[in-house]
Amino acid sequence: MTNQTFIMCKPDAVERGLVGEIVSRFERKGLKIVAAELRTADKALAEEHYAEHADKPFFGELVSFLTRSPVFAMIVEGPSGNTWELGRILIGKTQVTDAQPGSIRGDFATTTNENLVHGSDGPESAAREIGLWFPNR
Ligand code: IDP
Ligand code: MG
Image 1: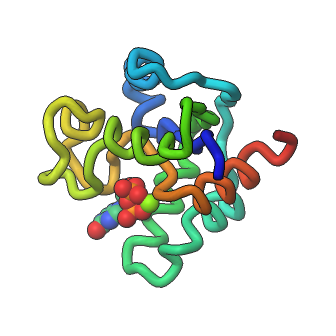
Image 2: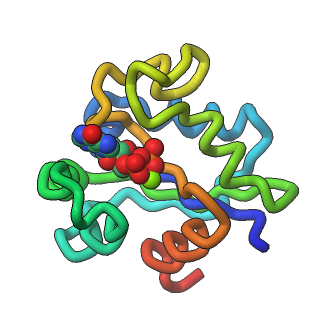
């Protein structure tokens, strides 16, 4: 069990200047940013990151979106093994019309494809994604 999760401000968030807003929501919650990097993902990294969606009709669009400009990738840490879940609550639901005000997506996103932020959806994906984006940690 890890107390860490992988959180990423996607290209739309960086382009819109929302990185500070997003980071501050995690900090205000009481979670700690323990690693962070602004970088442009190449196609191989984006495809690996979203491997579970390889069969979906929106996969091509998703990979071009993630690689079009820099992302702000982070390792976020909390006091217990539910950090990934706290992250998902701060982020909000996947479908834009389900994302409630008060969540990042609910407050700032208007489409499901460009929804500003990624967060691991369980302890296994947290470990996998941290290893993928921060291989030296
Ligand atoms: P999540 O980001 O809430 O974990 P996932 O189902 O893992 O949602 O989907 C990954 C990403 O793919 C979403 O954040 C969104 O950017 C995009 N996506 C999901 N569903 C659709 C869709 O129906 N059309 C276009 N893009 C989608
Ligand atoms: Mg997901």
